[in-house]
Length: 526
Image (cartoon, rainbow, N blue to C red; front, side):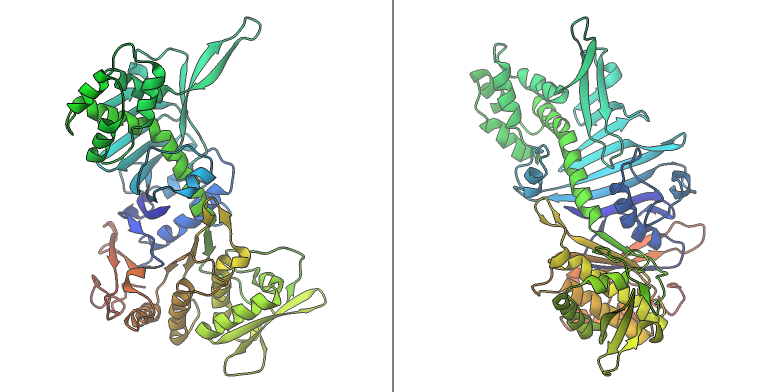
């Protein structure tokens, strides 16, 4: 799964460093310093994953609009490329690998690794120019040209260059898959058929053969390819000592045993075999990353800062609605489509945190939304209760709908996590009610009831000191553990200076650590 994200040269963000995805993440800071850019990366990923595309990302689409690549790249940076970094955690025996029917990387235990892609522009098109896989003390760099041809693969003792490999026949192609964030690549060789059939290309295990060739150097010349392949498949990806132990335990000929007994952590032959093992698994690792990113991105739910105003009546449509759209315009249809028992549970939940209940009443071809406060038995049309409530109701409804067992998305390995991204949840709300959003967020990520699918992350871009202060109170009261909340401060000391990103967390007393004095009173959080 994806644990952290890092952005470089994306609009105002020169380098965010890796930012972990905790249950609740608040983004604060001045306008135009990158906090909205960070928030919108998540719907950017979703709108890209949902479409068939030629480029790695769709810069404008259904949810957000970054313009073109030229608009998205940091204007002040001399390097006109954009980098996205992802930190993955792969548990031992990850079920999602088998369920997705992708090749199993050579992992043996729990593994954490980073993948960074570099996106550049060639003409009017953007493409992934570099991919770097980093795990343990190894780094594998893959360079790709605008046509999708892999030009170079470098990993420690291995430095493979397509144009410089004398063993590569002229009819070999190394193609990276376009239209993916992580470009999986394959080797193809042209074969000549019968004269009437012409020639054809066939995929070949070229890098696996390179690993086997490195292993052959430490075996008897008569060792069969099948035995060498067996040794190859038993070599894991891992820390130096782990791989060294694994190699020494692999059965083989006397020649093999004699050689590997002399291997040390710095032995060139051992390092070369270990590096080729990573290179041979690189495409399988990227396939795993694409699978995880699809699961991650389809779980993104996004609400814009300017949400639809409440209507007195909504036209009824016979649609199946599973989520609130990014403007909150379809909230009436979603609430009306809820079964009575689910709406009762939803009202019990928002009553606890917001002090209201909602009903969807149909009259002819129209639906009206009726609100009742906890202190009043009279129903009032949503259009008559103030603009702020019409802005917060889509937030509560989206959280419920995206985490309800009635709408749980299934992916390989279990229920897919939900990443709820909202900009300015406090919009048009009184400060006292802004604080209740914190209760809503905490109540959402702490839910234990039978209707909750158990996997939610909230990312909120906010200007509200009331919301942040209330979160601190909830930490101090023990309603949520301090490790589950973080506040990301996007700070810029001067207009021409790059924004500095500071991660603040609450201590056990609900006090923010690493936090600038007078932040809200000085206008920094405008």
